[in-house]
Length: 143
Image 1 (tube, helix red, strand yellow):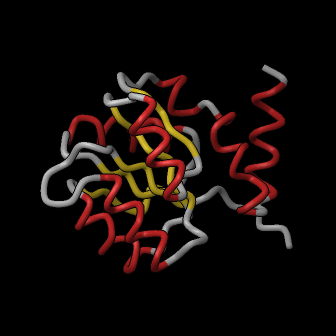
Image 2 (cartoon, rainbow, N blue to C red):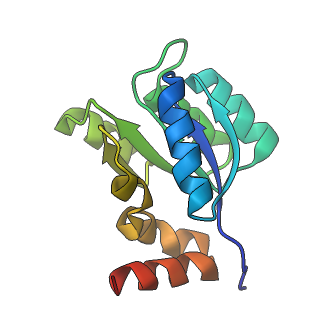
């Protein structure tokens, strides 16, 4: 099955400047940013309502942290690709997120190139089956 669209994304961080930066870069790259959340509980709810293909949550957030949200999101929809974002990129946190089911991990501080670096999303491509994502990965490999 080939789908000729880019994946939809939910940006999750309690720092509004981070979510705005993520949205700006992702939209400039042609992604469909379907929403944003300021904590893990909001992210879980938005995933139920918006059904994004990819979720980009921070780890350290109030109310429900990103690790807790990761578990809840994958319980309700195991097909969602979750790429964790955090300034707390200790091996323990990275391993915990990957063990729960995160598809990847991006360390802060975020840069434009770290956001659009498709190597991370390419590792999830086999799960998604999006022809567009495959094409993006191949284009980035040629740069």
